[in-house]
Image (cartoon, rainbow, N blue to C red):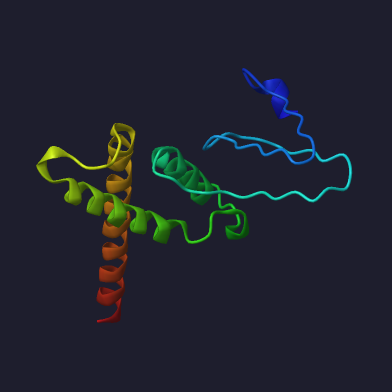
Amino acid sequence: FFGDLADSCFKVHLTEGQTFLIPCAWIHAVYTPKDSLVFGGNFLHSLAIEGQLKVHSLERRTHISRKFCFPHFTFAMWFGLAHSLAMLREGGPEGSSATALERRELRPLVDTCRAWYRRQTRQESARRTGES
């Protein structure tokens, strides 16, 4: 049992009508002892971009089936980058409406999108060279 191997492990018991949000990148398991209607999902936000990128990278390296991954993650990250840069531009030299945490989380997003762009450019270049 993974919980026996973890430094710390928590058990949370939810009752009907309760909602539980799990922080980004937390490993978790769900046990439902009786028939239930449960809604689960993932969402992206600007306060945990680095963790979201790490999870995505781990999923890619370990070949997790796409059906278990966040849909259109890369597209969402590019959209998030464009939105974040627009927020920063709107603020001008005095700053933007982005919080300090959001500005700090922007660096890993910029670095990752830059790496994705470079990889895509290299692949396209190699394809064109191979076609010649």
